[in-house]
Image (cartoon, rainbow, N blue to C red; front, side, top):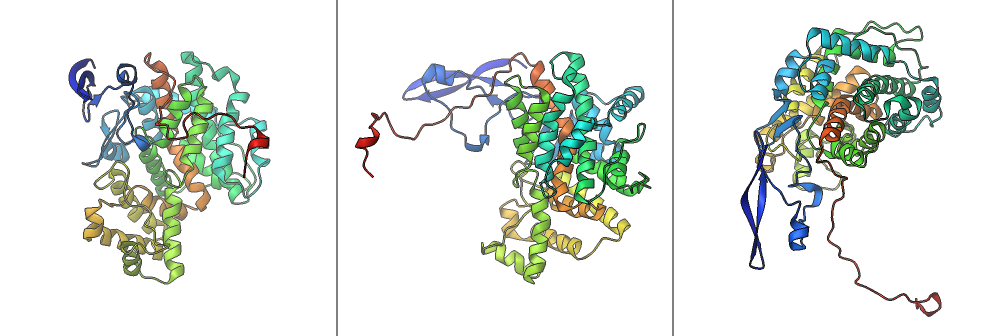
Length: 431
């Protein structure tokens, strides 16, 4: 995509030409990369709400119309017809795989799901009540020390690191599930379906046997697809900015795990489930809770609604709602909390207060309910999000490293502190 000069900025009577960066679809961008040099000014954009940090061909979002596409494919089609490994291949390599390519990809990941004994010792060294995301961040970073042959930037090294991250993190997260539920660690078995093997490692008995429910497997597969990428979100931007310093992919992804752990990002599904627990504990009806939300009553915080990008219904939320109906009915878990969720959604979609503020259910609204019904404790919800997001992080790191225009991330600031002051000796300072 070339650039043309057809934007202009006038400051104090002086006009400068700015180049437009053209998108194939969606927002074009005004390039301000030389603004400081040419004018001495910087742009101000807290939270980067209107700043494009890169060009990318991985994921497209239209928040106003509720559109999400991976490499051009609508999320609804991928959720209905694809599998998580297939979507991972698509995000990382740019095209849907052939049968041979997918088989080879699956087999290579499966062969690498065993983790080094040192990683197991590392996991066991953490306190039992340590949050799994803190452990996961450390484990991902530590992988580079156990597999130094995969930390370089050659194509073969990056490809190996890609496979290792997909394989090892699945096993690590499954081990974290076992720790959270008081089970001993067991060995992976090569040759199985990625999600099936993840569930077997996480939930099987001491002998390692588990008859994986195909409905549960498909539901988890679909949830991982929905979380696989979401453009330049907080954690993906973190992966990119850390990687821009030429940090290896493990350090970059580890930083992404840290960003995802926040309650405003990956921890939102935990917060949504806690909201329902708080409503139950208060004795309020959903209608009473909604009234408190409108009145901005203390402690009445609506979670799982609204999104930084989507100003209509989150397309992932629509898919999750359908899965929730099917899975919870299948498991017999369609109980009080799910009925509360459906009632809250019903009110929100018809109430002017929510409609005017564009507060529609997002992907986090139902995912906690589904993970809980599958048997995952609350603290495992965000690691599951990380497992799904792994292909997106990898894809963005690889894309950035191939882009010759990549520069080390270095945002500017508007300084509002003290002007120059002279040093005062300690003896001369007054209280």
